[in-house]
Image (cartoon, rainbow, N blue to C red):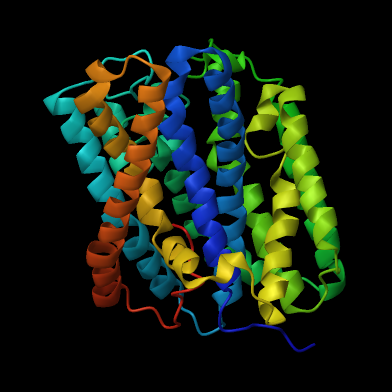
Length: 381
């Protein structure tokens, strides 16, 4: 059967910016927590969106890497491209985090600082922090980098996974997809059986022990299921076996899943509740691109911001801590906190764009040497 593989999937690049913005908003609104009431509820709503967004990143990563993969793509070349995509920006963000801790640690009820032990620093630099079931380690220094630690594991396995999936008979791909979806939805039930010490701040509100949190939130083999779901989804579209679904139905399913998340056990917060509908959304956007239908996500500005989204994702947290360090003593009212969040978002967006344009892209062009142009469909990590 002839496979479908267009040159560009701009909607998925634009979606990447939306996902990164969700995470940015979640951290930017940390400053609202100290004022309680409706502002704290607003942050809680955004927090739900950000955890779903990270799940979307994992699914999208598996999808895009599969979409651009060819039989001629050597494993070492793939790993080289991934290294130069993620590590320079990660090193920059890690350095900012370390400098912030060494020079001056901000103390605020509004922002709980990440762990900053030597173990957290070393494992965080080498992106292996997710393998240690300690919140102060896997959420240490630049906390959002835990997802990059998971991605490193995914990248290590991807050459084997994609070859394996391509060998599966087309008639069995839907069965594999359904199996992965069921695994993703049921893994929180496994996490609920795990006992351990109480999770420390800022995770106490989840009423979940530390080991259960680690297992369902950051343990790479668990989050691999979402990445694999993206791989199989891309493969189904490539071979023309993805079902046609109305846009309203996938949007409705995502909305219902999102609204139901607070009613579920807390283990469902970290991706499981929204992973399947997000996969359907991603597939639908890809098919729209294949059919040549444009939308708001394909606008040049949105696509550019999507291309720069990894820089935004990886540096926004240390920039948040540094800027809060500078102004925390002046934030005494809710309106001041809201103003800070707005100004911070604008500042970090400008910084991340500059990092992408003058640091990330030149290094990629000089050292990554990708075989295939991936500018508009490149992976987030």
